[in-house]
Length: 611
Image: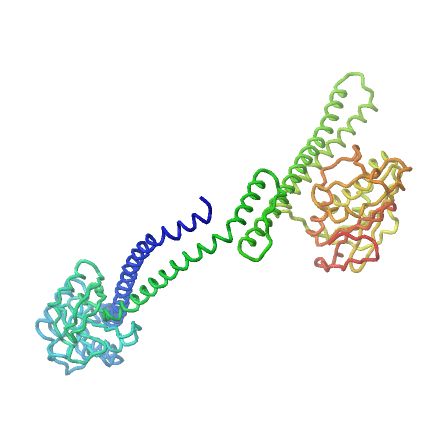
């Protein structure tokens, strides 16, 4: 079936099921919304219970302090009376404070003229004290609407009891933020009201034990009930919460009409909006069917061709509508995938080339070492040949070690764990040692490897071992990439507050297209031709790769990274047909440390590469 037919079928056949499902979803949402509101009431009741519990804990604290006194202190009436006076003096809501022994005899009381506790109340508090538990009871002996809260803490052989005005609860619960027109009610153990917000004092003392819904908190700490108030005959949804082990119950009530009205209006709004959306969906389906069929078909054809391997396949993208935007996004994705495929192919080629090069670099010296070792094992070999073979083996071993060290350095750089030292380095000593070690290689190519006699430069701050390796690598490159019979000069001078060590050759130079990638890893420069007759040639034939040039293309990449680690940099100036000059810029050693001030690179018209 075509897209147009499917859209029409969806628009016509899907309206009724959508309406049914929508109504069912609205009913589920309504129930979830109501449950959320009920849970919110439970949480608010718990919050009020926590506030009341903390207020009780604050009242218990001075009683526990008195109870913690040693027995001999409790038996000293003057000292005990002074402690009671200190505890009650800063608490205006406290009516009296007393210490009773296990028989109910008053050991100390403050104020002195306070009356006795009601017999039933005293006995109950002492019973709790004997069990080692704190307790709170409501004293209704002052008459209806007036009560005291009696709090008790056990002491050695008795109890310390304080009676507190019930009006203190107003200050404790007044600052709680609750929903608009919510009523907070606090009941004692006998389910009598001791506090009710937004009402007259006539409600205080009202017995709600006949409220069957209170049994909901007997099995768990919180509950939600719907009940008609005994005070004002208004139906409310109450969140109930027990206050610890005190037996007191907190009720937070909101009129059911107010609590659920906003949610019901919101759901009805959703229902109307849903019907409008269904109507709009049907209309949009008819309109969209006319505009998307052809672009989708063309896009599908382009996707099939692209999936079949034709990476040049593109979708139509003319226009400003969504399908044109989708076509442009598809084309952009196709471009990225095509470039990625090309990049993967290039990476695969580089990988194969790298593996082949490393294999060659490992196999060739090992083959030489193996052949010379067998020759050394023969008898009758004269001493000069033996020494020549041993020296060749030593050179080949050094090549292997250098290759392994370069691969290890690459791993350290890629892992961010390459570390160099910073110490005082004598430039002349490093250059002289490099020239001495590379003289034999230069003589094989008939190069004139010279050291500039004017090397009066200060010491630099560097890692001597790493600096020697970098400089040797630069010299080896000059030897490899300079035609036979060339000239290589090492020099050093102080330049702009740093020391610049230069390696200059008179080779063919570096092609401009190689300069941007000269310091990239695995990049291998194209060597100069052996023939002097080809020195002035301008064709690409002069840059064909020479089989005698070895290496895996890591030398300059490692050199740049090591120089940066030492606080320096490496630059190169080159002109095709005239040679190249590599410079190692290093900070001058100062007393007590290194001067790592960066030097601005110069640009005098020649090609300069570096950081």
